[in-house]
Image: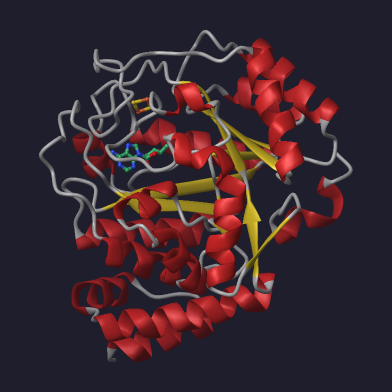
Length: 355
Ligand code: 5AD
Ligand code: FES
């Protein structure tokens, strides 16, 4: 089968086997990529129309107990100036975001144990009370089942926890030995079981990543059926062990967005900030390759430069005070419209607004 036939098969059956994934990933051309992007964008338009969901991210703490080799806020980075927002600051960000039209707030942080589950439940509950028509997404790393459950009961709707790689050996090359691939997988399973709309994902072109690893990532996505998939290119950060590793491929990131869209048509797939960082119009191209979500920053301006997972991150300077207007223009320039909605996954749409 040639690559176009493989893409057709994926579109039709939403499945490729491992050998087929590897063959496609090893030999795709720009033309194949354009073919997949066209089909993926068509698929997204069938499901979502030409409408883009937005989420406001509040990066509320860059303190992290982990030491991932790729990440700029890892605990060993002494050059990272640490900060924590107060509950009031977090609520203020959400209030401001609400005025801009955001109906999902993503609370993201390093694994900062000073934000206990009690505290986080209080913050989530307060946001839901102030904005009952909004969804809250958490992205605060690995917790115990009990904590995930309590946060869900406090009103959290969604959870982002990238699996990073479906290959445990590859995982060990990206993380110190006190972090466990199995634990990450268990967390993801628990999140789904509890009832969160759950997001997994990986960095494209992470150091030591092979074509086989990506095939395994895609097969994991097929099995796990996440409601969301976050994928961006790996971008080195100057104060990490991976500072000299090459950045991931922009083109491969776009291709993988398209392949995931064809595999899971309903999935919420963002055009990530990392994609917009390696190319000025990366997020637009992400949407044209099948993404349907954009996640701009709602963090206070004075902390944005401190939440740097990788070098060169966009929207950290003064120019970004009006992310919302900027994105609206960007999306309109490619014929899409940013809409004011929670933007739930289809399977949660009916009753989730009542929770
Ligand atoms: N480049 C790109 N993405 C990164 N992440 C962390 N560090 C980097 C980097 N250097 C991603 C990881 C993490 C998510 C929050 O950000 O996949 O799960
Ligand atoms: Fe914080 Fe990886 S460095 S979770």
